[in-house]
Image 1 (cartoon, chains in turn blue, yellow):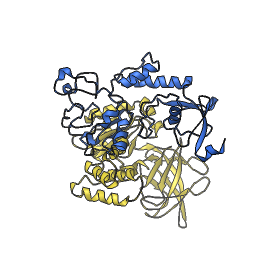
Image 2: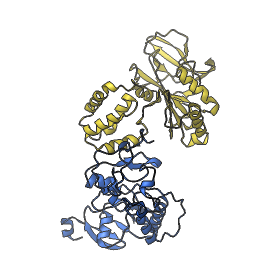
Image 3: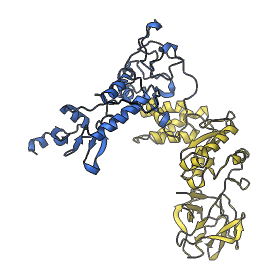
Image 4: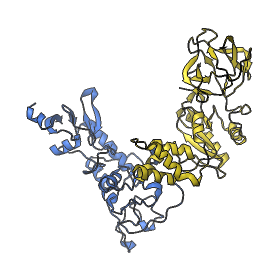
Length: 243
Length: 295
């Protein structure tokens, strides 16, 4: 290795068999994308801290029996590392992740596009029409870019959800709409204003009827009151704490 | 931490609106300057009031400069924290794998049916809270139900009514409440010789025989092999409150360990439980401390 690389903080590794040199401190995802190796991502967003929730960006590191899958968005590039961004094992893992994501949130355009691009042609899992895939983009957006911290993960396991404390309006929320903006599950913004028949919904929850006709907002991913997208005030929350 | 200790920490004075703010400040003061002390603060609040009042979460968030969303997230993540007041008696039904296949869910359902509540709820009169846990580590005894720190082993649907009756009548942990007691077989931790003495049964079971020394005197002490029963017998009179040396009657080695009794700070004696685990008891004559540590 030439001395100057060491001096300016560069490290050598092999991505898909090519010897490359990347800046020290970058993640595998940054390195691969900078060099032009495509890695699909979902929970990753430039400007937000890496989170590693969706596992879509898995890559294979190591060789032979020691080879393993890691999420490239959280794995730092290391000297001498051998990375494969599109091995059979990686592609299989990604397809499985996409199939599962598609099962929980089949209405998301982002997930549909990703699944289509990766050749997911079947869906073996029951469609659940979830409105949230818990990627945590909105949580990080709210905290890191908007410096508000109005929403966070709550509970754990099967009952894990994102929302405001006690399901009430947060005093920290400034109605910036950043959470809606970065959400991969509700890219299609609700355009309902005053004419329900012309509304194109599917923004905050499902492809089903416009928000106004729903019972309440409790199952929608809208943490703002009133919502800056559809301008419908959230009904008063029910007393009591969610289980 | 043993179940008894957990129980003792959990039950405190009922929520008192008057001194809420003051005490949260006190708890925060205690943990001031500690990095990442949020869980410790919440645990203290939980043990003081039995639950986490919303006002307390708000005070914690403000004092520790963490968003309320964060504090709420942590409070909802851990099963040890509760956002709603818990009832007078806490019932934990184990639904770990072993208890599950032995019929734990049926037991939980039966308790819920008799109390008219679901898991995680409290009865309207505030007497019972039903919770399920994912493993208590006593799989061989499953299905296990813990009421206020008292273990009921091999519970069936038929026993549920009696268990609830015990709790209602305040018989948990007393001689009348029989169901909560656990039969144990113990051995010397030094020579692994069984300490069971079938010749002198106590509570209709072989007793546990150890040699005790107090001052110049030595004698045999027999203890009930029901964990939870305090009955014992001795040939010689041991003065109450007297520190005694526990010895194995077979290898004559001391059984007294280095741990101190949380009640009276006398050294604890360790005996091996057949099938794994250990039972610890206080070496002070008359001290009720008994701890069962199952693997």
